[in-house]
Structure formats: structure tokens, C-alpha cells
Image 1 (cartoon, rainbow, N blue to C red):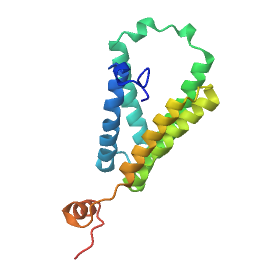
Image 2 (image 1 turned 180 degrees about the vertical axis):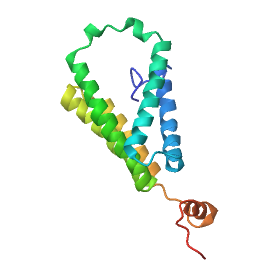
Image 3 (image 1 turned 30 degrees about the vertical axis):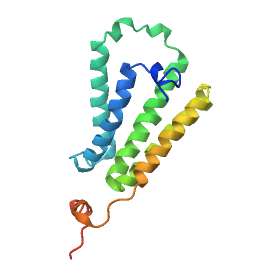
Length: 178
């Protein structure tokens, strides 16, 4: 709904961006679950710095392999683009990701995952407000579908009793003796 040039399924073309979207969501979920038990630095700021440096380094390698530095024209980068980069670097990466890392280690994962409700809505509204991006019906419907899907996933009832719920409690040290 958000990546097709029209609402027709046959108009959807498989592109690098679409593949990246399909890989990014499960990768983020797997990373979030792994981060709960991973040996991370005690400071959420240090953990954020390590993750940002590794992610940035990986993106630089991909950019270099695709030949992007050869075609980059620094003179054509606008002040608005530099401002957007600064905004995303400070608020979208450093502040928001540090908060997310802190939440991962201090609150239940189900509560932490509610970022997925807020982030898309905030991003769309900021784009509309600060960058004069158009709010089309398709964007609003696509956003509503995403938020509804996240709501269904995060509020789905868990199996009661059974080995899986006991095992989850035991792994966090919250299991009570029988």
C-alpha cells in the first residue's frame, strides 16, 4: 500500500527499497529480542554509540560498494537537507535510540514495542508539519493499517498456563516456587 505507485497489485515492482523494508522489520524484531539478553555495555549511551558506529560503518561499506561517493556532489546538498540530517542524527538517532535501548533493559518488551505505534505517526506528522509533505489518503490508510497490525500483534492474548509461559518467567527470574 505504501510502496506501490498505485493501489493495483500489478503496479508493485520489486525494488531494493521494497526488499529492504521486508528485511528490516524482522531484523529489528530479532535484534530487539536478542538485545534483551545480549551482553551490552551497562550504559545505554555506550550501547547506542556502539550500535550506531557499527550500523554507520556497514552503510558506508554498502554505499562505497555501490559507487555512491563517486557521484555525490557536495555543492548540490541544500541547507534544508543538512538541517534534516542534523535533526535525524540528534533526535531520530541519538536521543530516540538511546531511549529505546534504555527501555529494552528497564521495561517489559511488550511495553517497549509500543514505540511501533508512535514512531510512524510522529514521522508522518513531522514530515507534514516541518517539510510540507503531502498527507494523502493512501498514506493515512497505510499508516492506519500498520498501526492496527502492530496493535493486534502487541495486544494478542498470550497462552495461559503451559510450559511456554513458565519458561518465559523462569528465564527472567520471575518464576515463583510451586
